Image 1 (cartoon, helix red, strand yellow):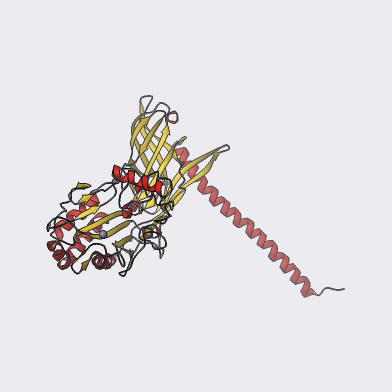
Image 2: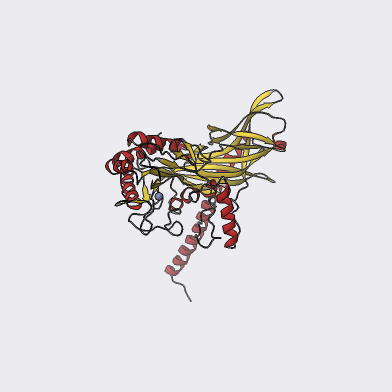
Length: 450
Ligand SMILES: [Zn+2]
């Protein structure tokens, strides 16, 4: 049988096509490999340049609001004979430009324990991390053999939290995604090196990510405080809707936990305490009105927040509301930290009661519940491990907060704007709504504007 010329040509063409496909695949995978190797080589060179030989370990890292906080320790054996003068965390790019953050530290037997801050809302402000790839080291400034020097150590993550994404607050319609990442690199034949890096990139904000969540207190079957024709639930909704509109006008992306006069469950899908996590919000405000047993006080501003934080922002909320809305700090002295600022935690009696209650209902008492645990669930359960959230489903009556163990959460404040049953307060709250709202907005803008 004689093959036609065209058939032979076709067969040759197919063979050529297959061969060239293989050749292209090999070339492509080589390019990929090389660029990967290039990247690895660059990192190794950086580590060699700054003489990273040993490591410190991270025992805890959290993001509360816009601050990354790191706690860790370094074995004294790893630092040889260095006389420590200062301890820092540094973020370094591949061209060795550094940004430094001073650490607090204390010696503890065989280790030196360090931390950025004992306040959950302090540490590295992630809003200040501009586009780029940063390697994070522990830096010890100290003397060895009478020579002052800087010594760098990699950071090895020993926590269960392996990575995290943070989205910066919207500014001029722009956002960055900040990824916290822990990797390992083959340093030489038989040593692997652990390191931490932060990758910051300009992005378009995903649809389900928000800057701020506002929670109009109560709603529906739960009217909250009531006086004459006024209910807390209705007023907090009006306030929250206005607040959202004005913040949006300034460019922030804002979500409400409820948009109608309806009951909103704390947990579960679209739960009040769950939305701030789901939306990766940086700030969470729960708006409330109080009622008092005292005779007609002039004002009742009470700003609640967690106990283990810097109170500046809470103080600014209280001061601005009092000054701009021409009202007064609450006369309430229970759990008061500063004028208008309150940090309510469980009392000894509350803790005992909670333990008894757990026994009665046949579940193990919560391990993190003690006199340092924030009392209000809107503060505690929205803050993950930073605020000792504990609602983990063991008590069948109150549901489950799937984020109770989260190491990233919004910075939360509960704002009691005034007393609904004080004639003076309710009149001011109704006639002067704009002033209360501008006071809240001024506090937010002043805090986040660079
Ligand atoms: Zn309330």
